[in-house]
Length: 456
Ligand code: FAD
Image (cartoon, rainbow, N blue to C red):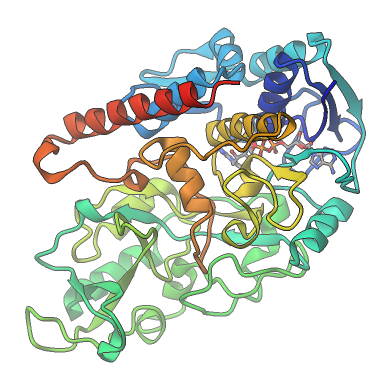
């Protein structure tokens, strides 16, 4: 009889435990609640939604809808629980969080192959397969243990994340490719400001509305040093924050602070004017395919609506599509491209698997999907097989590919259409809705083929 240990009864842990149990695997599931709560978890139930109650869009031609379809095909039980807890939310799947959690808890507790231990785990025993799904607020001795296994002394990051926009939504009449002083390849896209544009932008940014910080993040703004390029810098304690000054705080320090920081125009010539811009925003490719761009230095704590309003004033970003907004909260995640294999186990410790937000799959449904993928990989291992990663034209496959591609600015990533490879030029509908539908249909067919070929 196969036996697997799962740490954490959150979204990823419950999906994985239920799937494995359904395969007849004996699952030992450890959950620290109610003996210990993270600063964001409040209830005793499993699969607690700690913030929004939305599991996002359902339409197949949306990134979240496509992800759900792939999850359904993998046998997601959390989607069944969500169905039972559904509340009206237009085209989105939103749930009553207490009903959802109660339903998942009931399913787990009713499963004879799962033994629940309400215990805080501090060590990883890798003599048998173990799945770590303890989430983005993993801390204490367990975080130290993960740090030892991965060679990272600390995994606690302050996640001051910059927004990401799609390449296809940029205005290339304004945006130009260049590196400063023409050094190396033209690795960046540049958004040049003239003086009047910059002044209007500065005024809007300095007065834009910020999101409240959670109690446990409250020290994050203190002691921040300007570093235009510092995402996910390690922090020493919960209250010390190194490296990532939110752009709005920099703006509030004076009209020119950003112009001598991340918006410095030095070494750049705007091909439209033949002159150096007054200020310049750089965009850095977020993925190898260059379908997504990160706004360099724009880690931010502005409210999302404000980010859209103010950052759309950047020349070239007037119609930008934001696939991720900037956020600021504590986050714990692996340096996945360095330590994690496509099978979601540590390269150096193959019995230690990871799932959920801690891997870099960002979001509730993404975490659950990651649990399903990890469970399949574990099961394949128990059966003496290797499961190939899902094809990269599927949402799960694209996320795995993102996780395992070298990236020194690695940050968690949620499902979005920008990470899927574009359709061939001659098969690409102009209309966005039709294009997304074609991409989604390709993904579903590809995913189903992968499932059929790897059906245990
Ligand atoms: P979790 O759901 O956090 O589950 C981890 C479980 O492990 C918990 O039950 C925890 O108690 C348990 N655990 C932890 N350590 C131990 C231990 N040592 N021993 C035993 N058990 C342990 N995503 C969205 O899509 N929408 C949002 O609105 C959203 N808001 C977020 C807000 C915050 C503040 C944070 C930090 C993240 C948010 N996320 C959001 C991101 C992410 O989707 C959620 O964090 C999600 O819950 C991650 O799922 P998970 O299964 O990886 O971890």
